[in-house]
Structures are given as structure tokens and as C-alpha cells.
Length: 288
Image (tube, rainbow, N blue to C red):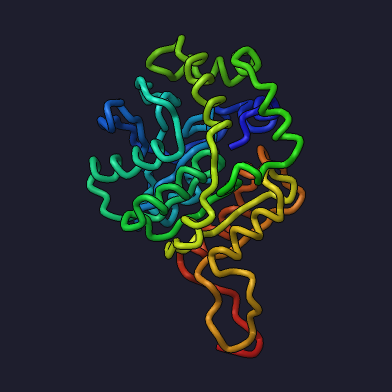
């Protein structure tokens, strides 16, 4: 979800440097836009959702890694990458509804979901608004409340301008892929507005029955306290080794990892995502 200056240097430099595993690209009409997506791998369906200002390529090596065990559907959101923009604000609710409509369009009744940053929050809203479509959700660098962000980012949000983003390297990357190469300033305006959208979803989170893997860097955009709070709302934070099954939801904190470094920690990400999707847990020394 971090859409500030550091994304230019840490996440998107060399967007095209990551090798993809021969994905098949296509477009489908979703809520008035032409949504671009790529399919790779075989197995149970897994939808992958990218961060703001970015595209499928920016997700890097985690997609082919996940495609070793899953049929991955990687989407590009409204106005991002090769997906057209429409005359509509970008909100997390709209993004979630777009994913639900995409699933209907391609015949996916239910799927696991992995989302990063904006894509992770959209995945959370998908589980809230369309729980019947989400088997399990792995969400990296997310929040359920606007007060979750680190104070320094709260200050930065107030200073964001379109010009700040159009001067960044990913503005050139946008022009290489977008159906409308001149549409980046309009997209940035919508994403700045998204930063100021209110988020207060505590009660919705508490009502979730979908298992959620919360992934955060220990130097991420959301405070660690917020990630722990989210985990507790989902039934986590209990003591194990008491003969009872562990909660279905999980929390993973990546060490020495900032927000923009989360998606580059491929081995760590895969090491927590895959066991979660499979329902595997480390064996207790005292209980089967």
C-alpha cells in the first residue's frame, strides 16, 4: 500500500528484471474496463494482487514460485499496467468487487488469494464483501484502520502531489504498458485520494471466518502493534501446546524488512504462504 517516494528505489527499479514462468496473458471485461491478467502454473487456483502504481511484473519472482504448486491468476487493477481506466474512484471496495467480477468472468467459483500492499487490502475487502469466493487469504503489508500507519507515513500522506509521482521511474514503466500512455497523472490523483479514504473495519474483521495469513515486515508501513491487533481479531495470539488446534489464521513477521522489501523476500514469503495454503503446521513436541 506504500505509495511514496521510496517505492521508486526499492520496489520498482528493474521491474522487468524478474523472470516470469511463461504466463499466458489475456483480457476480460470487468465492470466496464478491460482487465488484463496472466495465468501460469497448475493446481488449485490462486489469485495474486499487486500494489498501487505497479503491475504484475512488479510482483517479481514470487509469482513463478507460487505457480510451481498452483494455477496462478495474476490481475492488474483498474488503470494499472495493461488494464484500462474507467470514470470511477479507486477504493478498496471497488477493487474487491472487481476481483469478484473477474472470478465470475473466468469461471472461478472460489480461490485462494495472495495480495501485497494495496492488493492485500483489496484482498481483505474481498474476504469481507465476498467471503464465499475466498478460500484462504494471504495478505502482506495491510491494515484495517487508517490509524494503523506509521506516524512518518501519516505525515507524508499530507504532502503527496501528482508531481511527486510523475517524476519517479515507475511513471516511465507505466507508459510502456498502459493502453493510455498519458493516463498516469489521472491514476495518481485517484491513488492519492485512496490514501485519504477512511478505513475503520474492525467489526468486519472480527466477523471474518476466512483464514488469513498476515505478513508484515518488522519495518513495514503499518505498526507491528496493528498487525498483532489484526491477528488477535482473527482468533490468533493464543498459547499453543495445550492440546487444542491452533487458530486458522497466522501471523508472519519478516526480519529486517521494510515495506518495499517485503515482496523481494521470495524464499521467506513462499516459506510462510505455502504451508498456510496447505494447512500445514510445525509439529508440537508434546501433542500430535
